[in-house]
Every structure is written in C-alpha cells, then in structure tokens.
Length: 200
Image (tube, rainbow, N blue to C red; front, side, top):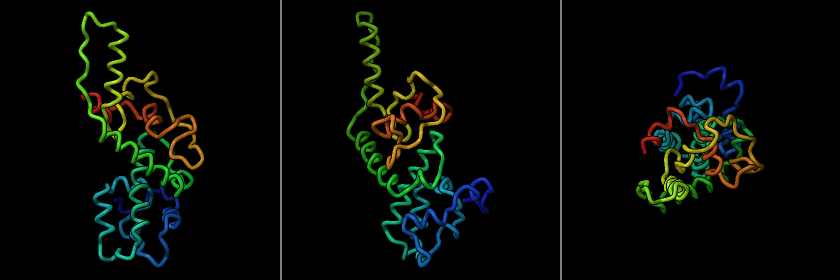
C-alpha cells in the first residue's frame, strides 16, 4: 500500500464515505486508514490474500463478516473495471452493483470449472475453411484466460474498442450486453497483459 494518499485519488474519491455505504461505521476499526488504503485501486494493489490477512488481525475482529465479503467482492470488481478502463466512482461501486458483480463472477467461475478446454483443431486439407474457423472459435470459447474470460476476446474484430459504455442501472456491465463476460470479451485489452493468453 502507498505511504500517503495521491492527489489524483483522494480528490476524486471519498474512501471513508464509500466504506460506510458498505457497512463500516465509526464504531468499527478504520482499517483502511491504518493500512494506507486511500482509493479502491489500493485494494487491488493489496491483493486478496493480503486483504484477508488485514481483516484477520485481532484489532479488526469487530468488523462485520458481511462488510468484509462486500469489500473482497468490490476488490475483484475494481480489478475488472481497471482492466477495461471503466471509471472508479461511488456510483459504479454501489452495493447493488457489487451484488450483481458477485453473481456474474460466480457464473463466470462456474463456467471455468465446468468446461474443459479441448485440443486446438488441426486444419486438414479435406475440411472446409469455414468449418475449421468455427471449430477454432468453439475451442477458444471453452478456453479461459485472465479474469476467466474466454479466449475469443483475442480474435474480436475491434482490437482497441476504447472506453466501455456507462453501466446499466444496477448492473456491473453496460446495457449493450447480456452479461459481464460478454462485455469483457469486447473490452478486455489485447496488450502486454494478454501475453500469457496469446501463448495459450
């Protein structure tokens, strides 16, 4: 964590106020001040295991379990938003959106656990090119990369789509999509951070 708040984060985000909306009161330990967490992006830098260790401290024993889970879910949501360039705002991190994200993330993880990636199809001379192309897409659809996103994002038509549209009311993805994973397929960057996915 940072040793002091940056002007770019503290001027745009009231961390204490946001944590209060998640259930932290003045009667609970203000763990974020002790750990120098001044912005939601600091939660991502802290990493999940370290954040769990923070909550397990004896001094933080009175922090409600429900609040802890909300912060852990929010940490993942912030990681996703940062990956696709979605603004980190109070409105985008409301309890309703965090709860929706928890469900979307659960569906994504279940898909990863249920589907087994098959071997990438080998192009044979007697197989029509369109059929082979569809076989490749089907394989990529069941092969998952970072954040549990199908590798079909690597072959989308628009490599750099820009910033994602505003969120749909109460959702962690925009109205143009039916799910978070559909949006991530279109907006997850194809850059240096996708290196391992390209190798897959």
